[in-house]
Image (cartoon, rainbow, N blue to C red):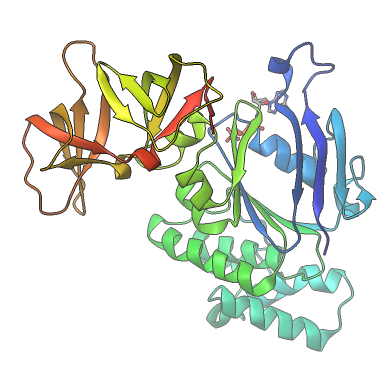
Length: 359
Ligand code: ATP
């Protein structure tokens, strides 16, 4: 097991890029540590699959080097990379039993039979496939077939990495939740470097130690789920992560205060690197913008969303043309449309200049 190093890896389909916009994947420098779980998360077309295909060898990058440990694998074919892959749709042998399917990658490597049986038993237990081990794959449900695919991807303990490309797409929604947390537990038990592509933030945040948030061909932030939630380094991360995402308000900063639509908001700190009166965006998550019965900004509640476990209020900061944000309503507090008071937690209010977080 070794780290994977992305040393300036980037890719432009169709030849030499003339500008940044020509890169499907803009050059990225990063080390993925052995034994950790990573998710590549972003909207359609952001470059996740391109990056995954570069790791697997399906795409040779136009820029940079890819290292598995000290070994430069940038131009090596897939079969020389020692990786396992799980795709969106099951890749299994229908005529084989579940046990034979799981054993296949190990047999191929010449592993002795008793060890194969032991390993197949372990993986089957992790994925609840033990009762099906003797059954032919052909007669099983689509969910069970995809679990076999997952098992085949996880069965070898000597791989450099396991790559998952949206592996839960075909799974029934009722089972998805269970399988998501199971995969996390499997990762902990197996200690393999895993890279998981998804556009579903819940999947990414449940599975990964670190999430690579991608937008427009760029890795905009690589962080733990908590870091992405509490300290989004880019406005895109703020509104893409979270449901609903972070509120972003246009305003101006001077010292440790911001002005937004005629209101003065205290900030958690001063921003000496910003010129006084600089135009910024203030980012605050709905969890930290709360309606209050005490002191607070005068606002107008324009809509209330009842999400069952909590209420969210849409509030306007003033008259015509004023900005709006989404706020939490504390449990047990009555709320109606119309005038209300809002408290924004200064310590949780982030300042963004040119879409990047300012310290
Ligand atoms: P999705 O979730 O839709 O699969 P993605 O995040 O995986 O999207 P990519 O498939 O990596 O994104 O695509 C990134 C960009 O590269 C897109 O603009 C896409 O149109 C382009 N692209 C992908 N594959 C090719 C190709 N073979 N030739 C030319 N352009 C491509």
